[in-house]
Image (cartoon, helix red, strand yellow):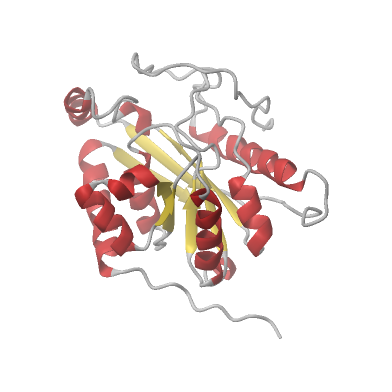
Length: 259
């Protein structure tokens, strides 16, 4: 008998936070959301895998998900949960704490798998950090997202975003005021696109290197989903944050598919 999933019901505090995020993004930028999550995937295990380019990303993604009537549970760094006010809000909203570099990482994957099995969409950043690729293309990913997908059988939807790097600087809160003022004056366009499910067929337990292969497929899908959002910036972004470091050690060799 097929398992019947009951969609996770987001707490009121999270729905309010998404509304607030939409208002904030509307003040600082012009938000364009395209694509969607297929209706057939909304009631069961689901993973949203997003590229990470700015400290403003969580606000943008919360707003974009609201536009698509999705209230995902976010896998977020443990530092946010330790903050006095934000941490309380994160816990009450049902988000999932990730303590990188500790044994708690494994617990986070178990919590995320349980959340997905309970009917929630789980939002993850497969790169594991704000990317530092000089072209701002998705970096080589960590295997956590792939291991989560393979463990719970959840489909992975790539969620590409572009433009949030023009709102808040990489080193925020340093330079926060200047970034906000610049965004208020310029109101850059921030684009978010929900892509097609990633093909993870042929991968699973017992397949050598399955997690690494699945990770590369997810990052490839993110790259291809991102490409149409930045057609005039195929190599390097027009806007360059002077405080953003560059690290090529995790550059992903994939470039967007032709056409």
